Length: 217
Length: 117
Image (tube, rainbow over the protein chains, first blue to last red):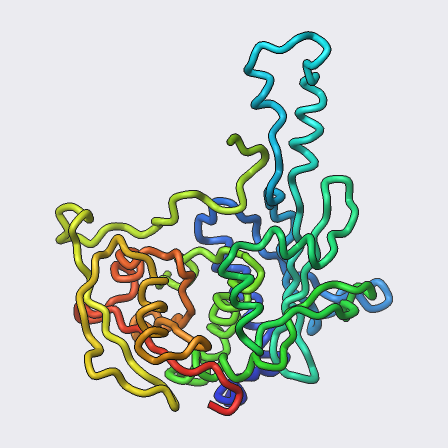
């Protein structure tokens, strides 16, 4: 019988793994327009993929850089030859206007909740600073990050990749998960944990989770 | 202003199938029932009709105005789908209603977002 740990807003590693796999499966089954699929990434120990430890990854999410100028618009006007910005330059600028984001959902042993790790990259592969990431966020996300004491971003070493990533700090997670899950029985709590969690975590980082994830299959 | 590259999300958020009895969604009102949890107080009037074309942010703003509290946690539960979640503010009420209403009501729960709540 599964533990009832989720009634306090936390979940065990086994419950996390089960919820993660259910999320990956359900996501694949719905028609998500502009986002790639979540993938389960087993951790590797001595080159062997672990059966029990892993995380969920959503990578290569496009975001148009905020305030980006499109030089190609002016090329519609008749301009003297000297001022013609070559098509190459427009393409270059367009490519530079795209930022790519990676999101990982990793289990925290200390808080017993999922934690969202994320990073943003410029087209050329350079990592975005937190200020640059915030410029890409919609107003609602910024509001959420500023208003709520329980959704804020810190920089932490990714537990499986040994590099610093940005993360939504997990300290308040169990409190709002308790609210979201309080009506559910044990089994449903475990499986529904990640989609429910994602509906909040996604808002904080401007990740638009489709409504279909919450409809009955 | 033209965009390049795949957009992060589609510009029209409606993803739900329309309710079978709806003629046109244009003037379809939805019934929202607000339910308090924990220390959040109940409202004197907690059930009302609102145009389905409004966004969920309307509900959030209404609650904030009524309760004089900015740190509210607002979310949707459906007994049928068993998939609780906190809707995005730009979600259309008609989409939420069509997918998650029970007995003609879209039940929206709210609580104060506090660690000790």
